[in-house]
Length: 291
Ligand code: SAH
Image 1 (cartoon, rainbow, N blue to C red):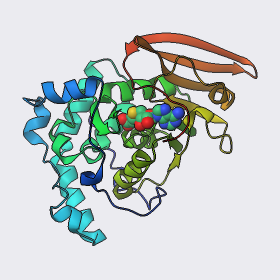
Image 2 (image 1 turned 90 degrees about the horizontal axis):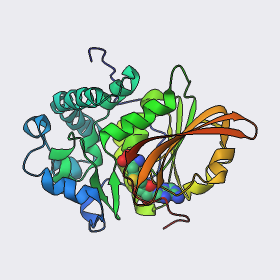
Image 3 (image 1 turned 90 degrees about the vertical axis):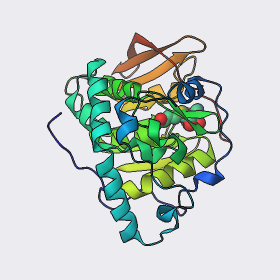
């Protein structure tokens, strides 16, 4: 990709709230699913990413103890430069896997995924794998993030207001914020909501709002949405989310239990929706309520 978008750092953040990133305080990681396997099988080599990614300093290193925003910015800038090549390589790999939308690929190339991971995992940040983020949850595979956003965008479908269910560590929300005018993202696990806020704060993304709550209820006070994306798999799409789609809006969600497939739903009328079942995928479960 030759077209360069320098989206980070962006104008003053709307990702608000106090607190700094403290990886050491996160709950112990115990993932039941692919992320743990991924982490293990890739610890011996994650292709191009391993040779070039500079892991950010650990929790007790200088970056974490610096209180001066200016110093932080300088550190981030060098961090961003150091990961430029692996980010580009990752976007190119995803393109070879079939994602065609140049804006989505550019967004993938822009967002520094290593900032969303524990320092111990950052060497694997640009491999195409899901990885544990604590609380039995995972950061999604870059390919699936890109694929789902591409499905939301379609040909010329404008993404003005987008809702994401399952903020997790905030990575996909950051990618979405590069291709949509306004992004709202809901997370049901409080410590992950806080983690996402801390991860996103240095990126200063002005068009992203994070919400703690049950995403199965959507965000009626902000609806209707042009697009809704679910980062967790249920057996069906919650009715509230279907109702919060604008006419013509798209929703992409993984559906199923053991066997899951991506489903794309388009609202074609006040009480009409069409749906198509697409490729197989593997996501953590969509759960009701908050934790
Ligand atoms: N978007 C993330 C993926 C996070 S994993 C990324 O960028 O990689 C999926 C997330 O969905 C988990 O954090 C999980 O807690 C959350 N989740 C599951 N059910 C939810 C619900 N009903 N409302 C909001 N979040 C939910």
